[in-house]
Every structure is written in C-alpha cells, then in structure tokens.
Image (cartoon, rainbow, N blue to C red; front, side, top):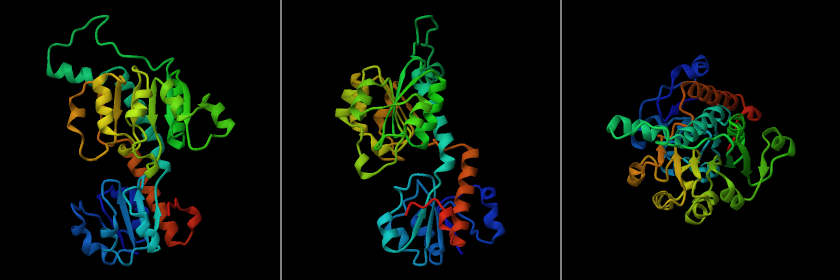
Amino acid sequence: MRIVSTTYLPREGFARLHEHNLWLPAMPYASKEELRTQLANADVLISTFDFAVDSELLQMAPQLKLVANFGVGFNNIDLDYAREHGITVTNTPGPVIEPTAEHTLALMFTLAHRTAELDRKMRQTDDVRFGVMNNLGVSLYGKTLGIIGMGNIGQSLAKRAVACGMTIIYHNRHRLPEAIEKQYGAQYVSQDELLQTADFVSLNLPYTPQTHYLIGEKELAMMKPTALLINTARGAHVSEKALINALRNGTIAGAALDVYEHEPQISPELKTLDNVVLSPHIGTGTIDGRLDMCECVTDNILAFAADQKERMNIVL
C-alpha cells in the first residue's frame, strides 16, 4: 500500500509501518495542489484536523481505500463523499483522552487563578500590585463542575476534578450507568439545569450539526455571572460573537478556549479581554500524546491491511 500524510508527523511513531515497507514520507504540504501527485496512487491517507479532507482533495485520490485520521474529531473529513466511494475512515480516540483532560484542568486553574492574565501584566507593566486583597481569583475546591459530554474525556476530567474537591454534574444525550455515576459522584441533569447551576462549564463533546452553537446568547444568559466556560472540544460549539458580548457585559466571569469558531483565525476581540485564556488547539499537544496517536494510526492501518476490522477504530 502507498500511504500519504497531509502533515509531517514524528517518524519514530510509525516504526512498525517502516518494518512493513508501508510508509511514504510526508512533506509539510501547504496546499491540496501540492499533494496532488502523491495522492494519485495513494491507498491510505493520514489526515490531521488542520487539513480539510474535502471532496476536492478526495477526488485527487481515485485509488484511496482508507483515511486514517490522526485525532478523535473527524469533522475535517467529507464523510458523505467517503461513504459514497467506499472509503473507510478511522480515528484515534484512546490516545487523546488523558492529554485533553489534563489541558482542560490546566485551563480551569489558569482561568480561575488568573495566572495567564497576571503573568502577562507583570511582564508588560509595573502596575501589578502585591497585596492580600489584590489579584484575587477563585478556588476550584468546593465548586461545581458541569460537564457537557461525559464520554471518555469528560470522565477523565471528572476524575481529576473530584481529586480537586469539586462536585460533578453532567449532561449527555444518554444517561450513564449508575456505577459510572457513583465512581465520580456525578449527577445527571438537563443542559439548562447544568448551565444555571455550574460554577465551571466544560464542553467535552464531539461536533455534529446538532451541536453547532450549542452555547449561544440564550445559554450564556442562563449561566451564573460568576461562571467560567472552558471549551477544549470544537470551536463551533460556541457562538464567539455571543461569548464576546457576554464576557464584555459581565454575563459570565470568564472563558478559556483551546478551539475557535473560525480556526485558525481568532476573533480579534478575544485577544483584548483579560477574562479570557487562549491556547492554540493544543489539547492533545504533548509529545507523549502525539507518539501514542502515531501508534494508534499504525494499528488502524495494519489492521486494515490484514482485513481485521474488529481491531480498527472505525468512524465510517
């Protein structure tokens, strides 16, 4: 099989593909056009979230049999085209769980304790005053965390939050088994109740057309004025226009974002607000996580080559 990757990835993570002579080195492609020659005879395409695998790109690969997505989210891929042309699509759900949960918790701490804001101000000005009642943040301990999307990442976050002394409420399409709820002391509530009750609201659900603007003006107005919103899932879950207005008007106290509605473009207004923490879609961005994702992509490709679908993380 001929394998093409849209993005340069750590070669050491694909050692087992090298052993099977299945690896075609990737270049840092800047456009679909630069990929055209490689795709002409490709059997497998390794894709990443920042490179759109749309119908235009897929038409350049008439022999393509598998899109092995490097990541858990797959809204960068035209699934309708893949379905119509019998192309299998896989993802890497396992390796992203712990890094994303870690980063979500890190954003919660950073936002609540105003760490990034005060670090920035101390570097840029001499106006930051030391003092017992200056620069106050809020504690995580004793607060309520509302998790929208209590899947693997949501549960991993809940485990960490419980260790911080937080109470967990959650909303899912379907309620979790009682045994899992007891593990985290988690209570299932409606989305409206979660928004009205939680001190911290974390979005940890996949993107679908139904979750577009899951959080808009109406939902933000339901939240406490002291509430903090964290989004490490997908940018289009949140209306950035509504969020910016809510942050300016004090409808909510702050937000921490790792993903953006028009990524990689970021609304300029977000950069001007002190009550926002921004990171450049690095929820899974650890070297350990990246290598684990490479191994998972390798597993999917080798299982596909061996016609062992039961070993694959199949999306489509």
